[in-house]
Image 1 (cartoon, one colour):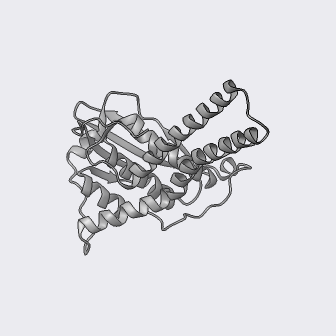
Image 2 (image 1 turned 180 degrees about the vertical axis):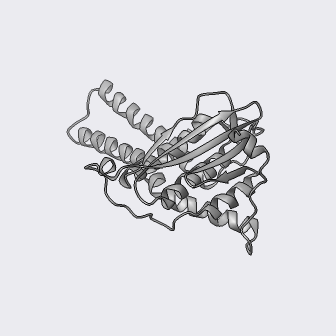
Image 3 (image 1 turned 90 degrees about the horizontal axis):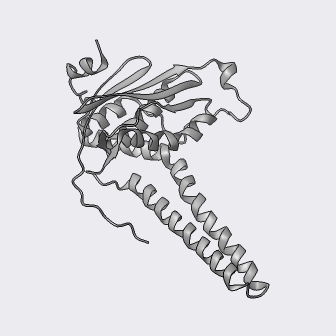
Length: 247
């Protein structure tokens, strides 16, 4: 039986007993954000540091005397470009904290946002990450993808006994996509690379109950086996009007 067929006959996972669904989902979202915080901070600071460094270089040139107009214009233009990039990065980081609930994203791109953000931290744990979702016009909720893909990857990695290879693949149908997040153990001698060190989570481990709570809140069907999480993600059409980002 295909993954799509199994999901079509599987109900949405119930909320953990004794806890309200909304409270469980909010706790899970907070847990995901806390685990992602170091990567989000890094992405934001990198661009701001580039602006500061370029400003220092420009200031040093001005202290030596007024540079030729062409060089001054070029330096100011670079600072302006770096500042714009920093603003866009900060807006993207802020969107993880306060997302637009009805924003859609192409499936491959949405998965890549999570994979790219987690890859460096996973490498320190001896884990690899791969986005095997095909490029397609299929769009889904950006919020649902971010929460569920990130939570699934983190929970599978946390539950793994050691280094592992994690991947996200998809089977796409007209109305929905079946995402499979898989975790395969890696040989320890293969995982012990020179730049790989033992690393503990910066916050609590994410559990299957967290993924279930998020799926229930987002209306996504899913099930789990020992080494994978499979979810049925519906197609979404964005209804929010286009907005111009601040300059």
